[in-house]
Image 1 (cartoon, rainbow, N blue to C red):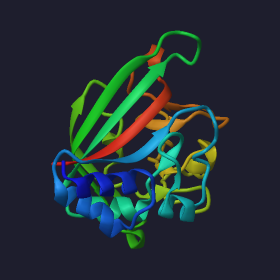
Image 2 (image 1 turned 180 degrees about the vertical axis):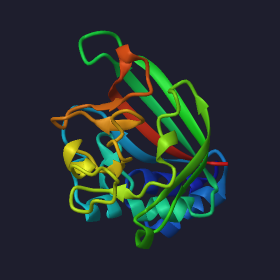
Image 3 (image 1 turned 60 degrees about the horizontal axis):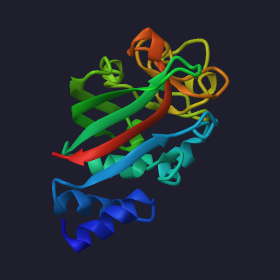
Length: 204
């Protein structure tokens, strides 16, 4: 990896870059990855507004979101794989178990289309956690774009995300009621609580 690529990757992974700089990371080498999302504790750090998700928040050593504008700029041409890594347990004091997922297709549309998600080509052992969300628009607590009739899913789950019509509670990943750990219902029943979750963008 070149010195320039290392510098750009560092900038992207600390949030101090423009979308254009992040695109250069992809052009640099296929070994470059960009941290897109990370949740490491039971706080309500993802109970955020549309604009906060748009520009990004947090630090890469803790809870973090790259920013929907940057995610769109990076993925709009289909040049990235999404990698998801989790450490999960039953929500108690039991040991954590690692699961992973990769999506060979991962594209996020622009803000005019509410950062609509298109994904596919799943592999891994996490049970296709985002499979039901292709074609879903992003929802935040102040911008409700999900199909859930009874509430705003981002309010209900204390977390902005691509929420389906059931707030992902049956099909995918969502925050637990109360804004604590995220849950993922596609994992084995004893390990649905995500103690740590990371999402990475990796060049194809």
